[in-house]
Image: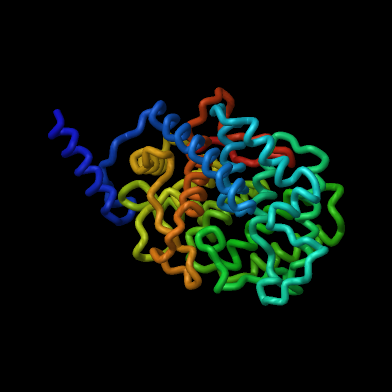
Length: 371
């Protein structure tokens, strides 16, 4: 029995190490619903502990340890999973509850401080859009939190360049969280769109229009995230699915033989960051676990999760974006676990409500179930 188990583990390792496209199938264990839900529960436990520890020691609402985990936990609760509601509520309040709390997050510039003379001082701290998108997923917000989101929108407008884009400094990028000027702009557009209600200022509406025009005119690279974020923006703006189908088909075609998806770096294997992100946006497009490609992606995440609730990742947070040289893996681990949680909770909810239809604070998105 022991020899058989060891052989199975060895076989799984060999299978997951292979690369290739979806037309070269690799046999990995098919995850049951309880196994998927246990995977999510482990990820939730990790995200709550890791996010709390980072915010307590670093005192910085970094996108990978604040915005992404809060968004994932909010989604998990919506889909029927048990989370620490006290942590979610208190952390959101501690970051967005008032202008003073927003300033204390270290991602919003303090007007009393001397302006940063460095070139990056002209740029936008990308922790702000991530935090705003996370907050937009909450079922309700206090008046203080809503005011903080307005301040974030104002800061975004202030930092916009005349052509509709925002500064992007290659020497400061943190891929895959901040992978390119186009991926950053996508997050900024989602933030402005979420705040473009009747109370939005004329300058915010104008900034949003200019940003959309800039991104539409930009020559997108072959980055995987350009594709996933295009679908994500389309879903959030209720764009007809047929308008997104070409991009959706491209994402499906990029699935690897192990069932996962990989970052747009030749030497990198499938990972939880990209796989979770891809599964999440495809779920918004109406794809369910009944579709073989989606089920294989789920199986990949379940098979590769570590006992502590994280997934094996390689950091790309270096000045030139090359993988492998960063020693601090907690940022990419936390971000990857957040994306994996977002994807899995929507595709394997514990609730009895339809996981493909969201009623958001600012409207609805999702195109209904397809296979």
